[in-house]
Length: 349
Image 1 (spheres, rainbow, N blue to C red):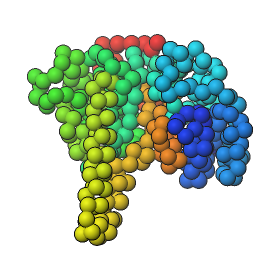
Image 2 (image 1 turned 90 degrees about the vertical axis):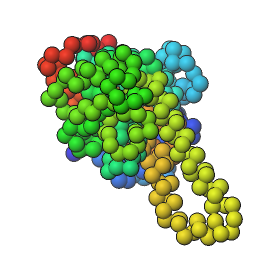
Image 3 (image 1 turned 120 degrees about the horizontal axis):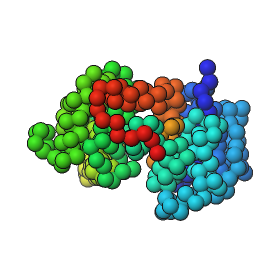
């Protein structure tokens, strides 16, 4: 059974067409059911496809030369949604020409275009950006929101928890993912009024397909004791950047240490299998593919600096969410939330 095809913004990302096409081809080598709508400059896409015979019968090209700039304001990008590769990729999902869209371009512009074209699901006030992060446990942790909404109230946080748990059930296979709110402490009295109210609502919403465990501090995000970490976009983005910075600091520190002396270089050769495993675990390409949850369609954001392997992972994320019907899972969970007496707080936009 073939999946709905995936629209690829071939012009997005730091490297543009070559890496995006290479990544799609790599994903298809592992899953030959994937089919693509490649949006961008036709000549450049055809040139990139020359080295990928496995893509020839599985891809259609939608020609477009206009590109959203990395520093372009979302409001400016929205005006050109009908002429840019990013806008046309998202619009393909709206029209039903593709089941999902993947872009490595401007995050703010992609969110704005996706929200305008696809709208939020019934019961969801705002979409949230969710990503997988590595942990010391058996499963990755899902964290949201990571920057789409800098100011959130309690109902937004509750909705994020519902969406994150639905996503986590697909990724981890857990029937009741462990969900926590990011806070400055784990005590019940800690945190803002919004966090306190969201915690109260989630505790009251018994019978949902999640296990609400209260609060978690930032230093415990990657320990493996939680499956979903919920935050406003401001705090979540800061926490994410701190985690990424710490990972780069550790790897750079190890490089400097192993280069410091002849003995250190010998030690590096002996410990190389362990350091390679660490490098693999911390490489963001191996966890690439953030998702805009809460939309009437699947949109995946790839790192702008992602390698072909990273883009392939983003494509696989999009395909898995289509296969597992994430939007329907979220819709069912929101209906269950409202059925249990929690105040209905939105009907889409």
